[in-house]
Length: 242
Image (cartoon, rainbow, N blue to C red; front, side, top):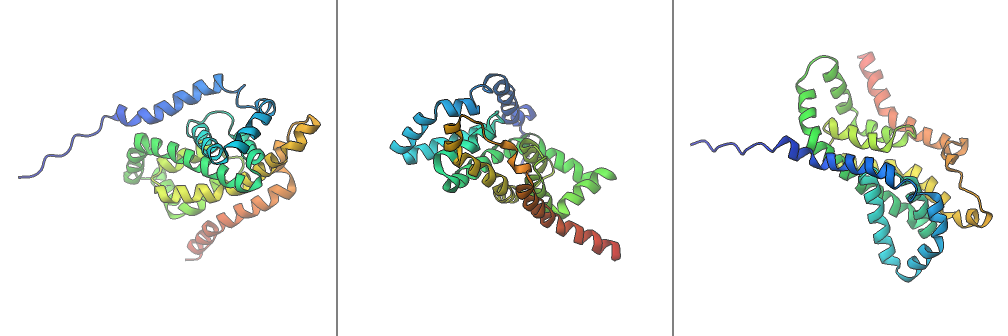
């Protein structure tokens, strides 16, 4: 006797994590913007340093958990969190804590989107014809390059870079590795800015958050972008000459 098929999961139930993330993101955008700010960091810097000095390991755990929450729920303040990581823990290991928190938070969004929408949408794209299937095949053929590109290009919003891979069926391990490695350059820049905030506070100034677009920073990142795109270019040239 054939075994009966297990009942399909309720579509609404599968979408609840993603709905919760979007709801918290909208609420947070209106309620937390004034709290997760540079001014708040400046006002509480002495208390934060005191807590870190008295409870270093706990401070690390609380910081990483807070970073995961900010990224996982797409709350405002991810840049401030990165600066805080540098301010409290230095460029290193601050960058490690920042990148770890951001990666785990990104995985939360990725899994919520894949569970709620991604698996079904990826299956539809795979079984479709024409341009949609060509786009899906193009991404599949160059997954590593595409994943690194959307992380390295400063213009791609972090939330979008978390959603797209989930919606086209990228494996979790590829998403996690490319996220962790791909955000290191930008994370390193802003963590180093955070590490120098003591002098900025002393002068009563605000940090230069546009530093990533300055030539001595942007050009090396664009070099990494070109390196990530190179496999796709070589494949296209190979197909053109075949």
